[in-house]
Image (cartoon, rainbow over all chains, first blue to last red; front, side, top):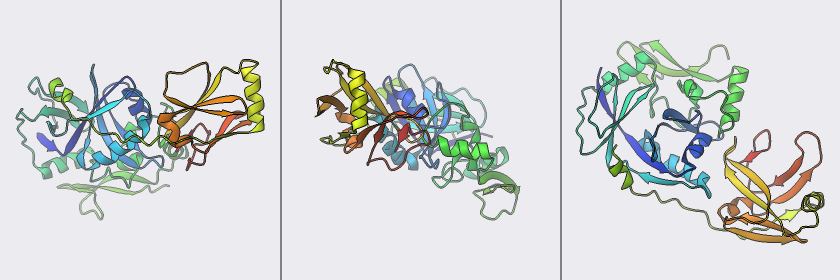
Length: 219
Length: 126
């Protein structure tokens, strides 16, 4: 396997209320670096982001086409809290490595469920050695959903394989009522599955198998 | 990602909503309960704020305060001083402060014409 470059944004969130705000707006219990999903109050996805917590700030790394929607969503909820947001997208490149590697010192690396996420200043060269189709195949075989494919605003996190990022007991967050009801009633509607090719309405096509979001059979 | 890069990251312009001159009402029952809470000391105020959080995105924050460091507007109704933070005034214009007298789910309640939905427990709204 190898390294692929992602179309990602890097937002720098600062202020004493930053972690509390992110925790209150997303599905995972955000106490330290982790992945989490920002949802609407109907539990539809706004974006999945990797949260990288440092001593000075919190970096949110998500899917660039979803950046403006996420910013609009977060901005409305800041009110009078001590929070500022900076956009470091233009000065950083984001890569994902499917295996553990040791990047140069100025590169921030964070282990996520998708692999090792690397945020590198644009001045640092990181060699990519994985094609899009190889990355797609890696995702299919490991059931890893991706923004723009499975993770879209049409889906809720449970439907696209992000159930592990939906914390069961963290308390209230935007979208929590809907997701908790789905879980408690055992009715999440749709689920992410991997099926042997050919697959109708596949979200990601691999060499032998594909990912598809389909209605749960026993619902 | 190095810290120098992050320190110079251009700030995202956050469009703050316009401050609204809040119009609000207090029901007779709520006035009665506020009188009982304030006692003879009417120098205190009821701070009605909004915090982000809860299942619907925003939560009410009611406090009886002597003063606050928040930038607030003061609405006086029948001798009761109500403080509304300007930062959340757009969410609170037109509210009615009520008091529900029952064992479960009782207490001060905000009826808010700006709220399109609220969560099951009534603690938060959007």
